[in-house]
Length: 220
Length: 220
DNA sequence: GTCTATACAATGATAGAC
DNA sequence: GTCTATCATTGTATAGAC
Image 1 (spheres, each protein chain N blue to C red):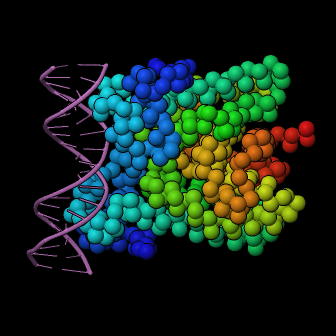
Image 2 (image 1 turned 180 degrees about the vertical axis):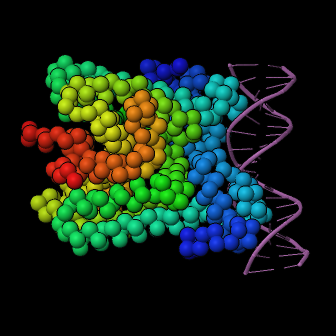
Image 3 (image 1 turned 90 degrees about the vertical axis):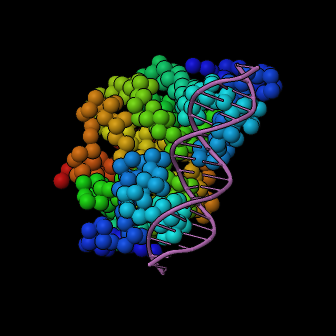
């Protein structure tokens, strides 16, 4: 599996390998315009390669998009795992800290250079080809760690209860990730916007923690 | 706007009008196979009409799908509004009852003859064409009633707080609606399944109410 | 007004030459 | 590895029969 993120833009795009250029062009175009609006011909035009290069390097258009998704999702999940590890060491048994580790990475990416990657991930969840949505559904390894951690922190909660609440929490998280705040903006007459990442993170964790029956956070 | 639901299957499909047959064929195929997998030719084949009939009656494939979405979403929102009205009369000021009215209709449709319509709505939210997702984002009239009701029931909560929490609640609701319980099933080793509608409804309302800072429901 | 046959441009994919 | 040429399929549009 290629990992373009480890060597991004060290060379001008025109000098980078064709495979990497296709990866970057596809990610950029899709994150801007969406999956449906971007054709294979658009991608190869931006990448400066021939139409058949996609087939040669990635097999099909869908497999190219799946590869991009895998790379970026892996990066996001790695950040989550690291934060979870820290939380388990520094604040063992603190369910709220676990939820924080789950939520924080995505909110950080919003105003990063990883904004493009986040937008791609968000679009992939909703618009992406079947292979991508299939992968999302069935690849749950990275989530088990969080379930196990929560079970340790909340020993009194029946496991079935905990799993359902975790399921609902993912709903909040992904709806948030969908970057579709337009509806909220309209509902609030422009008052509510996700510009303040710190406040957004706090609101997210507050809501999910409440769903788990945890008391509100102490004012810091 | 046609409303096929008011006269469903009163005639054999082969005798119904072409426009209605196209509507029903498209809804059934999409709810089974998804938006991407169903072509215009699949639809007209099942409906027993010519390829050009879609263009004649609905303009484009996307507009056909948008029409189906509008009809079914209107039905769902009408049920929600009725439940909200009842809740406001019988249990005024009870925020939990308001959330219940928001959540219940979709859970009822799961095992109805409206299962097909619900599956279509769920798919439309994630896979549907841009026009559909645009409509979802911008058409918030039916939600304002719920926001206003919650504001009355929770006068101490700042409006910005309330709107954010409502936004998160919609995330839970739509993730639930996505009928994508496969991930939860895998995570729970098959333990958690949405078969018990009553329990699912209770869990949903419990989680969302907790997110709003409401105390757990009294055991009934 | 309704419906059908046909045609069209654009798409994802592939075979085979170099 | 890269390219040109070509393929079947897609959504859509048009002309004309009933």
